[in-house]
Length: 171
Image 1 (tube, rainbow, N blue to C red):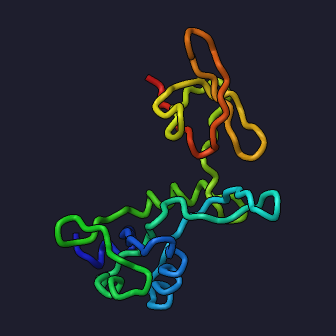
Image 2: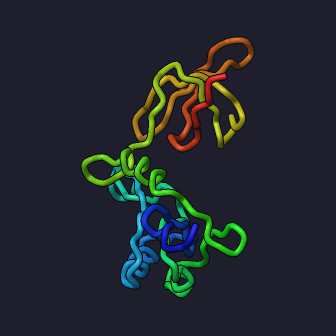
């Protein structure tokens, strides 16, 4: 498939400098590229204020850029460190993938990630209970999740950070 044919349906993935996705996106737009930088809202606790929301990229360190035949100029964009390649050409992401991502955006333009329902199996990714699988039991204040673990033959509720669990696919 030629580069011109790709341009109407495909995107490439640029890697960005650490925590510079927005800056890289602005610079790519200034060079005439169409970009997509999906973001989510995440609650943070501050030292002086109780909590606040910040927008963070769904894929930290990455930026979707519309394919065009002179993608090499993207490599000279401030904030962009490289482009994901497949051989000597950029790895192509089809437009339908980005349409699926965009379909998860709420009315404010942020991605809504799926939230587990109580009773769903989850795996703990970090902390003292890393690697344990349990049942999601709900949310607690300050973005903490309650998980029921089977410890010493009985269900024990543990509290973990919201980003410390992931849903386990059904077997």
